[in-house]
Image (cartoon, rainbow, N blue to C red; front, side, top):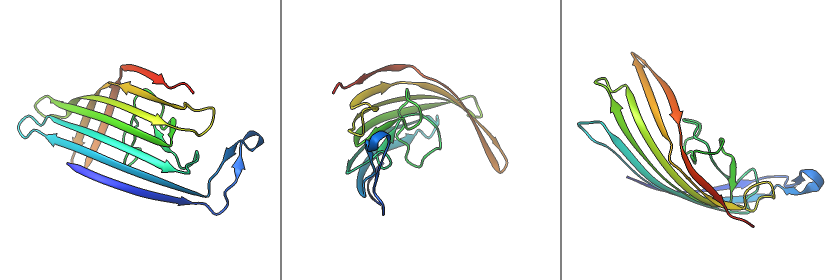
Length: 174
């Protein structure tokens, strides 16, 4: 079990504006607050495993470069990815968010080099970072993936075949 909290401050020497007619602003100071609760367990005999996590974040004076980035399911792309299948990688810029996810993995075969992995995530977010982004929304997703791990002496190769089924997206209207 893991309970953790973070604070990050971003300071820029030259805040400015950019975009068409200066409609986007780079803030001088941004503050990010983030917390996560994670429970993970592997059953000793069957080697089946599950994890459940709840992650939330808020920010003060965030701009497009310091906002939280949700979306996508690129493995090993970030130390603490805000994975949300159904979107491209880091597609959503959020000032605050809540992300709930779960995973269950069932190893296949005697060597257990293949695993059937079930993932479900739900997120709610809010942003005011410009008119080209969703003002906020809720996304629920339940993809499944088949993961193959090929192990050789001194190396670990991993191949991932993924399929997903999204249960829908409901953006809030502004």
